[in-house]
Image 1 (cartoon, helix red, strand yellow):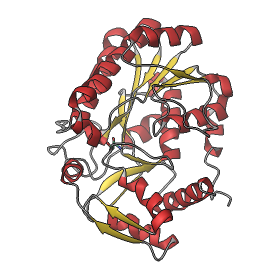
Image 2 (cartoon, protein in one colour):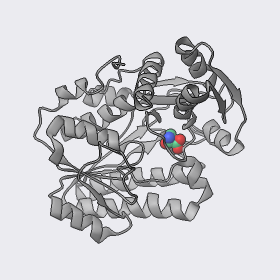
Image 3 (cartoon, rainbow, N blue to C red):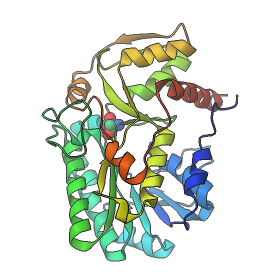
Image 4 (cartoon, rainbow, N blue to C red):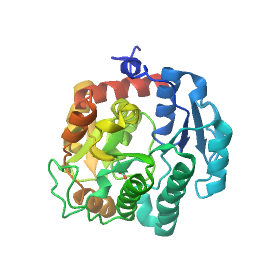
Length: 331
Ligand code: AKB
């Protein structure tokens, strides 16, 4: 069935600039494939090099120009940058919040050593570099509603600690060495791709379960409010932020967000499309504690003012497009 909106249409507006040469790390994760499609659509097949450490899933038709790249190996990153004439690094490799708690040494390696390597390569080769941060970079002492760009950041997960480190190290590389570092703090991202190891993952799994079983068992309490954003808005925020003139940026790290809801509220939105949908709850204490330490909503007025950020999807539109995409995927 046709999609309610053409997800790529808005990117035409941004594609007036000359084509960047982009390398994406962790490109087979939740966000990489979508961003690859957007850049390909805007500038043609050759502008993106996708990299990761796993094999391409069989049947994937959207993966092109793909290479093995271990972000813990600085000279391998450099080799790819030099060989491909890269000018922009988009660093998506990371262990997410829930899985990070299960393997702290690996989280430190991937999330901290990886960021150090990426920033060093960006410094040496004068690259623009995007590293996402997250609501996880805030903690229980942060104001939880309308959390501003500049506020208390005392996270209680290794994921959050590593993301504050990435933010601070990137800002330091910017002021000390002039590296064009850019960073957005994302809420939970809702996409038609399975994520791995996050606290906000239920907001994706709920759609797969709705279509497969007509019901979902949620690991968060029904009243847990978290900020979220639909995939296309997330892609637009990256592309638009990277294209923004450096002189318009008041800082290098901004909040961006879409809308906030509880499991109860998303279940109600799903029932508008699938009236028989049911939800029940089996709380995971680890993920609940993480969610309870995070903001309920983000203030992204800085991004709106400085570089024109403007999300397009609210909850109902997100539900509609998720069903349309997943139904198309499963035939
Ligand atoms: C997670 O839940 O860990 C991520 C995030 C909000 O950064 N999706």
